[in-house]
Picture (cartoon, rainbow, N blue to C red):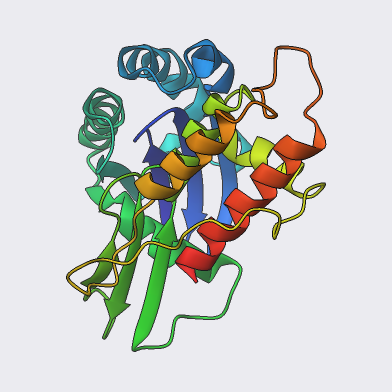
Length: 256
């Protein structure tokens, strides 16, 4: 069975052809990083318009790379949420129209569930019961899976997602967008034990995540006279590298 998968939940237009749920025949992604970089984050209206412009050529390339044609596709799967509503609408409307025209099923997919099952492409089958940690740009959750298709939320973030915290810290330090890859790169040259950040604990005892307090602590360090945000074209100094390393190490420790 050949499935055409379509993803437009945020700022990337993506399409893939998968055989029998296991073999990825093609995977094509159009990034919008350069479009949103001047704003330091994703602008929903711009993202939606870019999806409209890119979705047809991206799907066409995914089919071509897989060496198949639309008539070979048995079903269309599309991200139905969660995500930016305007971006999601582009993918869902395109997928529904395509499936209707081809007279094949259209399958709506929760993209957090997609994150859980994506591990099977490069790893052994999931054995149950299992725990799934989701750490993406907009989501940070821990799920308990007693069996396939059954989920129970163990913990969630009470404020920012981990990826969102990375972006906001990078913007605070003048490092640019997206923040995750930049902070990770700088952290390699810094001391992760240089700054001791506080690990948050929920007052009600729940194992939830929280990154707002850590963000506030970083902001306090940025305001110190000896530490200045990076200016455009300037190379970060050792203080910025140490801060990036300490921040990243704290986030990882919180997740673990």
